[in-house]
Length: 194
Image (cartoon, rainbow, N blue to C red; front, side, top):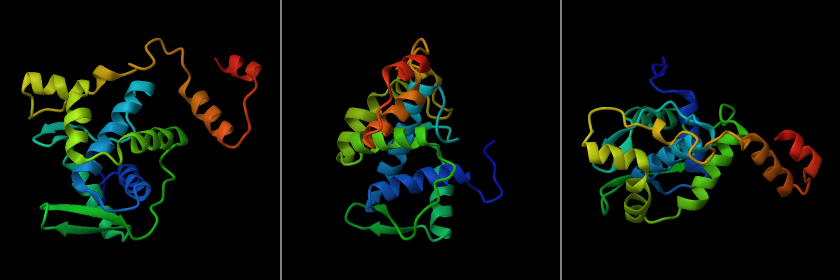
C-alpha cells in the first residue's frame, strides 16, 4: 500500500535518510533519487523484491517516483535533513541534521544499499546517469517503448543475479558480516545453509 497518513511511507523515508547519512551530506536530489532506484534494482536482482514501495516512471533525468518528494518533505519536516538550493547548478542538496531511525530497513537491505553507495555514491552525476542508470534494463526498455506515463517494468530484472534461486542472499550477507567481525562461518555450516 502506498498511501500513508503522513503522506510518505516511513520505510521509504528511512531508506532515503540512510543514503543521505552514508554519503555524509551534500548529496544532490537527482543523485539521491537515482541511488534509491539502484538500491531497488539491485535488491530485485538478488531477492526479486524492492527495498522501497516506490513505483518508478521514466522522467527526463531518469527513473523516479513523485512520492520521493513526500519522503524528502517528511525528512525535512521531522528535522532529519537540511535542504539547500544551489543557484550555480539550479538544484537541491541534502545533509543530515539528526540521525534517521533505520529500524524498518533489514540488514540485507542495508547491505544492498551499502554496495550501491560504495559503487555509485561518489560518481559524477552525468556519469551515473549516462553510464549506469540509463543503461539499466528497466530504463532501456522504457526508453525503447517511449513509456513515460506508466510505471516502468522493474520485474524484468527479478533474480537476474540469482536465476535458479540456488544462492541464498541472506547467508551471503551474514557470512560477509561474520568475516568483517572475523567470525568465519565453517564450511559445514555454509554447505548446510545451501
